[in-house]
Length: 135
Image (cartoon, rainbow, N blue to C red; front, top):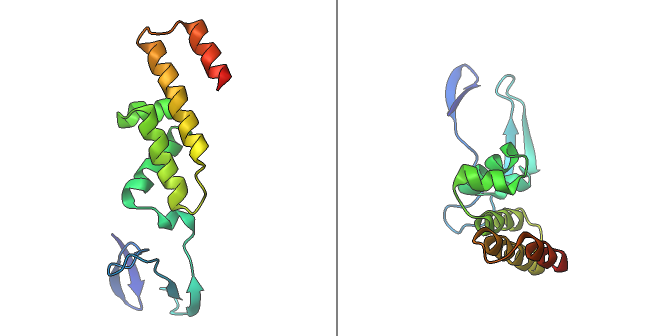
């Protein structure tokens, strides 16, 4: 919790709520105030797409960015499987208001299935490469 100044009295600053605690709908920001001079703006403001994410989704995004988008590194850091990383990424994309194409999710699952078979010895490298190219 950060401390801001409201006039002369320090006031604890809380993280902005983005969802209504009663109905779950998006909240609007209608007033912005400068703590230094007291100037205020009234209107209809938004924090942007990232503010739509839950705390858990934001933590995932931070890990994803820290790993520079390398899913293998995200898997290792979070201790989760490739399909789980892709599913969480799709949840974030959807929560930000973008479309998640079902065929992308299905393709990622099929790729992972081939890689799992390769890892377990069920496929040779050449067979796996052939199947992946066919996807």
